[in-house]
Length: 207
Image 1: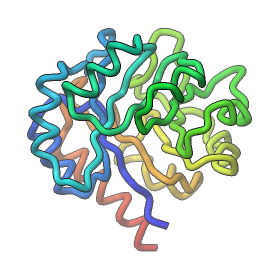
Image 2 (image 1 turned 180 degrees about the vertical axis):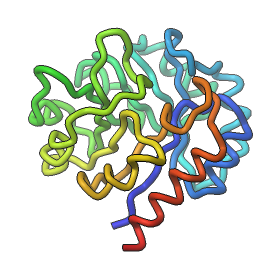
Image 3 (image 1 turned 90 degrees about the vertical axis):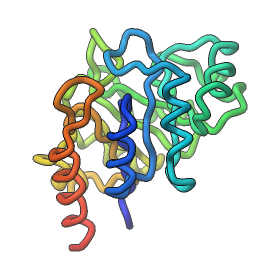
Protein backbone atom coordinates (compact mmCIF):
# COMPACT_ATOMS: atom_id res chain seq x y z
CA UNK A 1 0.00 0.00 0.00
CA UNK A 2 1.34 3.43 -0.93
CA UNK A 3 1.26 5.85 1.99
CA UNK A 4 -0.01 9.20 0.80
CA UNK A 5 1.46 12.50 1.96
CA UNK A 6 -0.21 15.76 2.94
CA UNK A 7 2.06 18.74 3.54
CA UNK A 8 0.19 21.10 5.83
CA UNK A 9 0.64 24.69 6.94
CA UNK A 10 1.45 25.96 3.44
CA UNK A 11 1.88 29.75 3.29
CA UNK A 12 4.35 30.16 0.40
CA UNK A 13 4.22 29.27 -3.28
CA UNK A 14 7.79 27.94 -3.28
CA UNK A 15 6.96 25.47 -0.52
CA UNK A 16 3.85 24.29 -2.35
CA UNK A 17 5.83 23.86 -5.56
CA UNK A 18 8.57 21.83 -3.88
CA UNK A 19 6.07 19.63 -2.04
CA UNK A 20 4.34 18.83 -5.33
CA UNK A 21 7.65 18.10 -7.05
CA UNK A 22 8.53 15.66 -4.26
CA UNK A 23 5.23 13.83 -4.66
CA UNK A 24 2.76 15.33 -2.19
CA UNK A 25 -0.81 14.15 -2.69
CA UNK A 26 -2.42 17.02 -0.77
CA UNK A 27 -1.53 20.42 0.64
CA UNK A 28 -3.12 21.88 3.74
CA UNK A 29 -3.99 25.56 4.09
CA UNK A 30 -4.77 26.65 7.65
CA UNK A 31 -7.54 29.20 8.07
CA UNK A 32 -7.59 29.35 11.87
CA UNK A 33 -6.74 32.92 12.96
CA UNK A 34 -4.98 31.72 16.12
CA UNK A 35 -2.50 29.61 14.14
CA UNK A 36 0.94 31.04 13.26
CA UNK A 37 0.44 29.29 9.91
CA UNK A 38 -2.85 31.02 9.12
CA UNK A 39 -3.14 32.14 5.50
CA UNK A 40 -5.52 34.57 3.83
CA UNK A 41 -8.01 32.95 1.46
CA UNK A 42 -6.90 35.18 -1.42
CA UNK A 43 -3.26 34.12 -1.09
CA UNK A 44 -4.27 30.48 -0.74
CA UNK A 45 -6.23 30.80 -3.96
CA UNK A 46 -3.16 32.10 -5.82
CA UNK A 47 -1.17 29.09 -4.64
CA UNK A 48 -3.98 26.60 -5.27
CA UNK A 49 -4.35 27.82 -8.84
CA UNK A 50 -0.75 26.73 -9.49
CA UNK A 51 -1.17 23.17 -8.18
CA UNK A 52 -1.17 20.10 -10.42
CA UNK A 53 -4.72 18.78 -10.87
CA UNK A 54 -4.13 15.60 -8.86
CA UNK A 55 -2.86 17.45 -5.77
CA UNK A 56 -5.76 18.10 -3.40
CA UNK A 57 -5.94 21.47 -1.61
CA UNK A 58 -7.35 21.06 1.90
CA UNK A 59 -8.86 23.83 4.01
CA UNK A 60 -7.97 23.31 7.68
CA UNK A 61 -10.54 25.04 9.89
CA UNK A 62 -11.27 25.27 13.61
CA UNK A 63 -14.88 25.69 14.78
CA UNK A 64 -16.00 27.80 11.79
CA UNK A 65 -19.38 29.41 11.28
CA UNK A 66 -21.30 27.77 8.45
CA UNK A 67 -21.60 30.95 6.38
CA UNK A 68 -17.92 31.76 6.83
CA UNK A 69 -16.89 28.28 5.73
CA UNK A 70 -19.00 28.46 2.60
CA UNK A 71 -17.38 31.78 1.67
CA UNK A 72 -13.92 30.45 2.49
CA UNK A 73 -14.24 27.43 0.21
CA UNK A 74 -15.54 29.59 -2.61
CA UNK A 75 -12.82 32.21 -2.24
CA UNK A 76 -9.84 29.91 -1.63
CA UNK A 77 -10.60 27.13 -4.10
CA UNK A 78 -9.95 24.38 -1.54
CA UNK A 79 -11.66 21.10 -2.40
CA UNK A 80 -11.69 19.27 0.94
CA UNK A 81 -12.28 20.47 4.51
CA UNK A 82 -10.35 19.25 7.55
CA UNK A 83 -12.36 20.03 10.68
CA UNK A 84 -9.77 20.46 13.42
CA UNK A 85 -11.82 21.85 16.30
CA UNK A 86 -14.78 20.68 18.34
CA UNK A 87 -17.23 20.55 15.43
CA UNK A 88 -20.26 18.35 15.97
CA UNK A 89 -20.95 15.48 13.54
CA UNK A 90 -24.20 17.06 12.32
CA UNK A 91 -22.42 20.31 11.50
CA UNK A 92 -19.77 18.54 9.46
CA UNK A 93 -22.33 16.52 7.51
CA UNK A 94 -24.60 19.43 6.63
CA UNK A 95 -21.93 21.53 4.94
CA UNK A 96 -22.02 19.60 1.67
CA UNK A 97 -18.24 19.57 1.09
CA UNK A 98 -15.92 16.57 1.06
CA UNK A 99 -14.52 16.53 4.58
CA UNK A 100 -12.85 14.58 7.34
CA UNK A 101 -12.40 15.13 11.08
CA UNK A 102 -9.20 15.60 13.06
CA UNK A 103 -8.97 14.07 16.53
CA UNK A 104 -6.52 15.18 19.18
CA UNK A 105 -5.28 12.04 20.89
CA UNK A 106 -4.71 12.39 24.61
CA UNK A 107 -6.31 11.58 27.94
CA UNK A 108 -9.90 10.50 27.42
CA UNK A 109 -9.60 9.72 23.70
CA UNK A 110 -11.18 6.42 22.67
CA UNK A 111 -10.77 4.82 19.23
CA UNK A 112 -14.55 4.42 18.99
CA UNK A 113 -14.94 8.22 19.15
CA UNK A 114 -14.23 8.35 15.41
CA UNK A 115 -17.43 6.36 14.75
CA UNK A 116 -19.51 9.46 15.47
CA UNK A 117 -18.21 11.02 12.25
CA UNK A 118 -19.16 9.20 9.07
CA UNK A 119 -16.29 10.39 6.88
CA UNK A 120 -14.11 7.63 5.40
CA UNK A 121 -10.91 9.32 6.69
CA UNK A 122 -9.85 10.78 10.02
CA UNK A 123 -6.71 12.59 11.10
CA UNK A 124 -4.98 11.82 14.38
CA UNK A 125 -2.90 14.54 16.05
CA UNK A 126 -1.42 15.05 19.50
CA UNK A 127 -3.59 16.70 22.13
CA UNK A 128 -2.41 20.02 23.53
CA UNK A 129 -4.48 22.18 25.86
CA UNK A 130 -3.06 25.35 24.34
CA UNK A 131 -3.32 24.62 20.62
CA UNK A 132 -5.42 22.71 18.10
CA UNK A 133 -2.39 21.46 16.16
CA UNK A 134 1.05 22.25 14.83
CA UNK A 135 2.72 21.65 18.19
CA UNK A 136 5.46 19.33 16.91
CA UNK A 137 4.45 16.69 19.46
CA UNK A 138 3.65 13.08 18.73
CA UNK A 139 1.26 10.81 20.62
CA UNK A 140 0.96 7.16 21.58
CA UNK A 141 0.90 5.49 18.17
CA UNK A 142 -0.87 2.42 19.52
CA UNK A 143 -4.05 4.49 19.20
CA UNK A 144 -3.38 4.85 15.48
CA UNK A 145 -3.37 1.09 14.99
CA UNK A 146 -6.66 0.78 16.89
CA UNK A 147 -8.33 3.58 14.93
CA UNK A 148 -6.96 2.13 11.69
CA UNK A 149 -9.23 -0.87 12.20
CA UNK A 150 -12.23 1.48 12.00
CA UNK A 151 -11.21 4.22 9.55
CA UNK A 152 -8.55 5.18 7.03
CA UNK A 153 -6.17 7.37 9.00
CA UNK A 154 -3.94 10.36 8.37
CA UNK A 155 -1.16 10.32 10.95
CA UNK A 156 -0.02 13.75 12.18
CA UNK A 157 1.92 15.11 15.12
CA UNK A 158 5.61 15.96 14.97
CA UNK A 159 6.46 13.81 11.96
CA UNK A 160 9.72 14.65 10.21
CA UNK A 161 12.77 13.04 8.59
CA UNK A 162 13.91 11.45 11.85
CA UNK A 163 10.75 9.48 12.61
CA UNK A 164 8.64 9.21 9.44
CA UNK A 165 9.95 5.74 8.61
CA UNK A 166 9.24 4.50 12.13
CA UNK A 167 5.80 6.11 12.11
CA UNK A 168 4.79 4.43 8.87
CA UNK A 169 6.31 1.06 9.75
CA UNK A 170 4.62 0.93 13.15
CA UNK A 171 1.16 2.29 12.31
CA UNK A 172 0.66 1.59 8.58
CA UNK A 173 -1.38 4.78 8.05
CA UNK A 174 -3.14 5.54 4.80
CA UNK A 175 -1.47 8.96 4.80
CA UNK A 176 0.91 11.07 6.85
CA UNK A 177 0.71 14.78 7.57
CA UNK A 178 3.97 16.75 7.46
CA UNK A 179 3.94 20.18 9.05
CA UNK A 180 6.08 21.45 11.93
CA UNK A 181 8.56 18.58 11.52
CA UNK A 182 9.68 19.95 8.16
CA UNK A 183 9.81 23.67 9.02
CA UNK A 184 12.47 26.23 9.80
CA UNK A 185 9.81 28.61 11.19
CA UNK A 186 6.03 28.27 11.51
CA UNK A 187 4.63 28.35 7.97
CA UNK A 188 8.08 28.25 6.37
CA UNK A 189 9.08 24.81 5.10
CA UNK A 190 12.73 23.81 5.27
CA UNK A 191 13.57 22.48 1.81
CA UNK A 192 16.21 20.03 3.05
CA UNK A 193 14.03 18.63 5.80
CA UNK A 194 11.13 18.25 3.38
CA UNK A 195 13.34 16.42 0.89
CA UNK A 196 14.74 14.22 3.64
CA UNK A 197 11.27 13.29 4.89
CA UNK A 198 10.15 12.25 1.41
CA UNK A 199 13.38 10.29 0.92
CA UNK A 200 12.88 8.43 4.19
CA UNK A 201 9.30 7.66 3.26
CA UNK A 202 10.38 6.36 -0.14
CA UNK A 203 12.79 3.98 1.58
CA UNK A 204 9.91 2.51 3.55
CA UNK A 205 7.73 2.24 0.46
CA UNK A 206 10.42 0.33 -1.42
CA UNK A 207 10.93 -2.35 1.24
